[in-house]
Image (cartoon, rainbow, N blue to C red; front, side, top):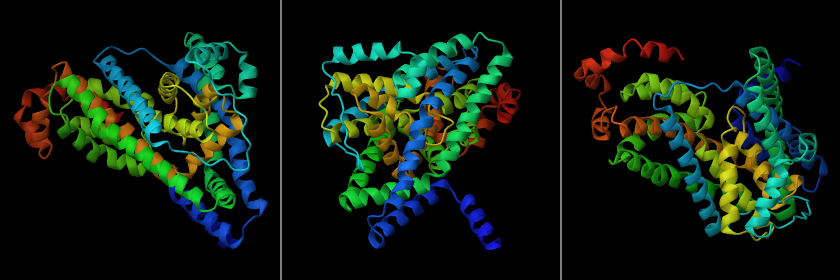
Length: 440
């Protein structure tokens, strides 16, 4: 009994990434030595079914509680930063659409005959989208109509924003409780991934693993292009200076820690310290960094777009560029609500899939495929999201002429303390505000 408790304790203390990796390896080994046994595939089916059942409720409660708790803040340049966040997400999603059309990644559907309804012209997509907005919320949740769920959640959340603090607290507590339920389900991801990998190899041989590998390459390549091309272009547009000293420093000092922690929230202290070393205004970054950890989700926008279009291409659904870009905008807005939940961006894929008539069963298998590759995908996504929080905070401040130039920041990157000594008036002006921000 003691030995069993020790094993369970060791397993629980291990990071989710390692557990998922072990699940993948076990799934491959079982497919070789113990093929064609339904009980192994059952773990994958249970995992996908659990996500299918709870994901609609999660989206509903998470959006409601987020909008209900939202508070207006004084404009200290945060509005400009939020605009940069949204521009980055839209452009990253658009890049994901282009990459998906060029490289055509696919996914593996296990034991599922999918009967989808291909969308017609863009007008038909918009027509169905508008009708989905006004469906009965209860029916939307039961049917997995994520567009209707999102519309109902936004309306109810805006209305609840005027409610009493007690009501808002209750809504937040309910949302937090559902997040914990999803976290429990995600903790079983290693068993689910084991079953999904086992079923994929039994159905399509080891060729199916190449599909996952190719999908990872497309995702990581798109995120790298966003980090090294899209984001620097936005910074250059904002500041008119060479963006790479700032971008590369933020990728190094913020992106690398975020890659290993896989949590934008956990990386907030790292980002706050980096902003301090860059000499940014603490009144601004003390708001923009926590806010960015919540809504700045360029990586999530890429993940949702690429995996959705991979499902579209696997099913042979013909869609127009305009329809894909419309889906990209929906994915971008949806990505703002994906923080705070493990695999949050993956759980919003059914929302995008519903725009192209892909049924919930198939969409949830795409989510399962996302968990198979999440060992790499989620780390890269978090690194992109978190590092860009600092990049855009700095770019916005420089754009309005309230900070040092990018050239000066590049020179000071190795000796932040010397820089602070050289600018005593600036340091003195911030001395009273910074300790308060650091505590946050």
